[in-house]
Length: 154
Image (cartoon, rainbow, N blue to C red; front, top):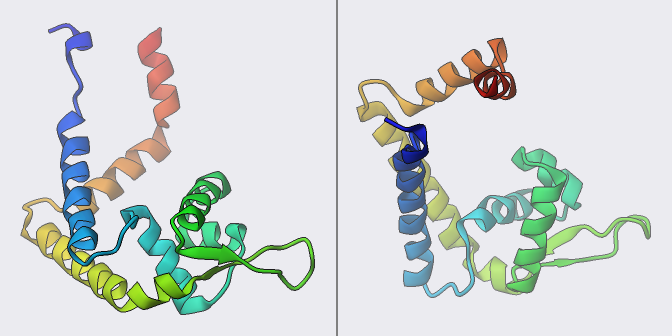
């Protein structure tokens, strides 16, 4: 088989995208226009802990500043967050808008439901995805993916 005809983990990527679409459908069914699944974690963090800078939000969510900056811009454009003047003029924390506050009970319930369903699926698997992820991380700590790629290029 020619590896150019292969996309070994495409089914995993497709499955994750399908799960994401199922979650997004809940927002549509609830009438929450413009909501994306990637918004919910940051919105819940702002709901629970109050206004935060992009850096603080990125740290809390475990993503890069760049990724959170892009998400924050999209959430602002969609009307879910707004920036406010911080303690000093250099910071512009984000806070929830009235629109997102209105939807928080549903978003919190959806998050809990999603986590419950994912944990149920993980428990039903003969070898949990959580364990697969931990095992992959351990293997990549021993020999990082970048090095594996370079070795395969040689």
